[in-house]
Image (cartoon, rainbow, N blue to C red; front, side, top):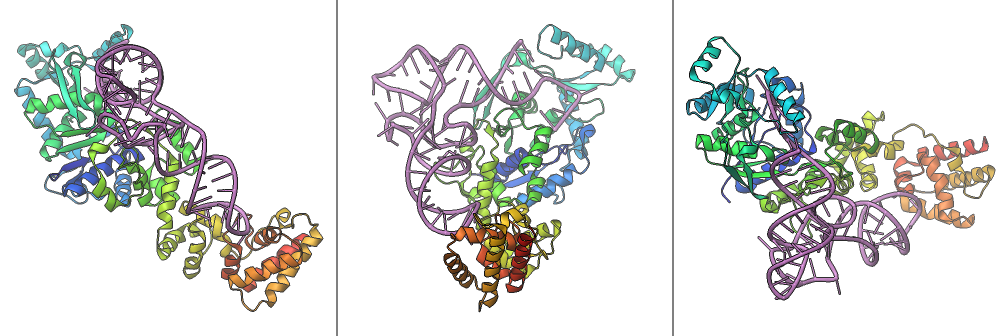
Length: 493
RNA sequence: GCCCCUAUCGUCUAGAGGCCUAGGACGAAGCCCUCUCAAGGCUUAGACCGGGGUUCGAAUCCCCGUAGGGGCACCA
């Protein structure tokens, strides 16, 4: 395949979400695969909707995912500027060029008239469309309005009849009757271009060969094709990706859904939050890649290099996919288990700090093998392994009881274990295992009967990393102290 | 209201006329392993939206329904 020039063109009106990330990923993959270029362009022509911090958020999220752009903000490139608002003069010139060519015209209709028109059409159950009022203005009328300083927009002259056919790479030909389109605005009265013109002009100027974007643009695709044709510009390969649906399969994700997700499930649709929770970029990438694209009927485990090698537009699925976070967790597990221990330890360290425990780096590195296959996200680590670093643990006395035994009997059993471990020549886990297993047999207890209360005493948890390995890492002193404390707690009952 | 897109297990998907008594993955259930929890191994349940065509033959092609999604701004 020839080197492509693709672009990801987000609008800085919010945080980067998984839908945008997947669009960026597919673009990136195609660029890398063909030795082409991945352009990042910021579409900020709607100054009113800009959200402070959104741009920074997107750049950081893209970088975290490893989707480094070849041209764009912060890195520059031969087609700078890459921020659309800085290209306003270019867009304006294009709009005027179209007017001169008789393919667009100035429109002086007020918003009031437009609103009234729409309301009327709504009442009549007619599609809301501009009625072409200013298209028929005589030169004299137009000149008069202009002289009076009447605010004007520029509208594109859509052919009244006939149809427009555009080809989408994954959906085939799409044909719409031109009568269903109206004379849409391409330049606002403030002189800034609307998306339709700005995006097409920039795509052309930047030499974009493939436009891979969200499905929501499909209805306006004919407008874009019309603009391109009006200029006589070549069309890129179009590829419209289906939007993601809620996990329930119903509808698009809303802000409210997003908040709920973060709070109750520990998941998120925002890339930066996924990062905060402690997901691996490799897992997010693997997950996203497979939502709407597949390689074959077997392979699902991909790293970035493999994705670059295997990706193809032809295998992108046109149907909408519901977001499935269980699958994310699965990929997270796959990639997490594959991570080198020292690296995982380094990544985990800040999460312990955030949880209020000082985790000694050397100790953490010894603990990681015990928890690596027991955690999903980094956030899961402190609750599981925080007991290694705390001075003492809080035990629930109920769980300190040996099953089917009284408190006193349980305390006595704990004391037996205490004495045994105190006398053991080594705290090496297999030795601890052997000794404690023998003790259980001697006391006619099932292993679990003895180990459960011990686990509670030593870790303060009903669920923990392997007990004997944990004891070895904790050291005899700490283990004995905690068992003694547990026994004491029982006696106080 | 109008326009566009989509339609295989609960979910993500494989399938591009016979290889399909429809394959894989997540999730679920069961078993094994086992000090808890995981991880791992094995097994099971589970789908071609409906109706018409075309064809010797359709999950695959066409049409009509239906359902879901998206769009119809001086937003992107």
